[in-house]
Image (cartoon, rainbow, N blue to C red; front, top):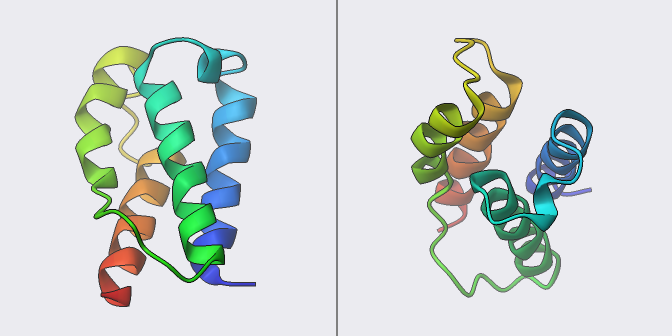
Amino acid sequence: MNEIVSDCEHLLELLDKTYPGEKYRATTVHDMYYTVRDIIDDVSDDSMHDNYHLTSFIHPYIDNTRDYDADSEIVSLLEKIQNELSGRL
């Protein structure tokens, strides 16, 4: 399986586990969730329709969730996926 898809699926699992129900509310977690799903679709179809900027979610995510942990797995995955996407261009 493509590493980007695998990392995206792991991020979605973390978001579901850590913030159950947030994907249904107008929150930063909701926006991240559906953007990551779009990335999975684009990578799976081998067509990148958008320039994704996942790192732009980091500050709003931290502000909204108060997840100030320097070792946040969610923040690390956002950065990793962004780097992987940049390498595809």
